[in-house]
Length: 250
Image (cartoon, rainbow, N blue to C red; front, side, top):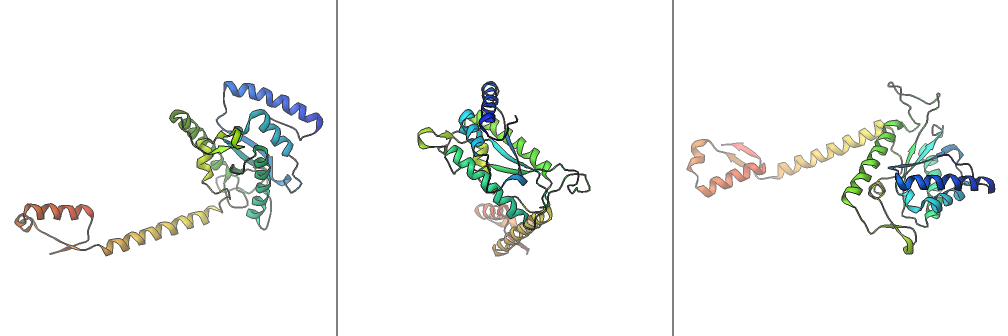
């Protein structure tokens, strides 16, 4: 759908558009909702609150539970790109919180850019200033939201977390609850992310090796010596082998 900036005349037009969407959504509920806005047009004078409020009024607060905030024109040259994005997303999320009367809602954010001058990687994919290739993430999140929504329907998922005023709460969707655990701050470039993962794996491997070195050692017995053990000793010997205790040759 496309809606104009709020004004006395466009508000009536937007309401009419939303009412037609509401009628259609009753028959075919959307799997995922994409709320698009221009990143470069968001500042402290952000004036879309009336529109956010109108969307909430007509479609209900629950419409925001499966909504992804898609920010276009995101290839902006900024010395502090992460800070630039974070400040503007805080503004949008703040007004969504006001529209739904709840601060628990945390929408996932995707930055997109299709301008020809945007940097590309060797595969021809658009790369944002933070080193992120946005299209795979965009598709992945949409698919995951759809799958999680289907799981919610099949399992009839319910949770005590609500949205809105206590007198009129909406049950949070499974996609919303899971993405709520994710950090909305966008990741750094791919190289840094891979470096962090490698460091974490190396750390876990070192911990496992330290734990293994601390295990008591057992002697590897030949068949003849093993058969000389009592039944209970044989069972204990086999159990220690299954547990992976360190071994040395007799």
